[in-house]
Length: 155
Image (tube, rainbow, N blue to C red):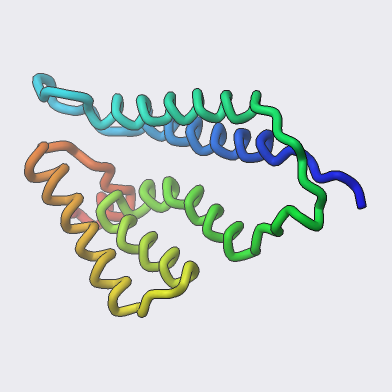
């Protein structure tokens, strides 16, 4: 029985990778019309990502008493697949756009997560996509990424 490694470093590295990917994605956003109050479509994700980077740094510097491998639970393959899908969300947005990507992502991850019947997943995912469209596009008048496929189809 050998002692397990401190998981904080791997978790902090994963959080850092996701935050940096989110910051990089903000450089592809359409410009927000000037004069809108509050944080824009670029500043808000960068602020959240900066907070995530700070928390990842704190986590990475936090020492823990490592558990033995028998005590540490294994991460299931389903959890790794869901994490990979989270990373794949940004490329999906680039292809089909933000509004269609949200329901697709929620349905696929919900089916993998389990515990909810697929009709409820479809209804809640479509409801979330419509709610985000209403709030951000109609109320706040923000331009969300359309994706190259949606743009090519003329929507």
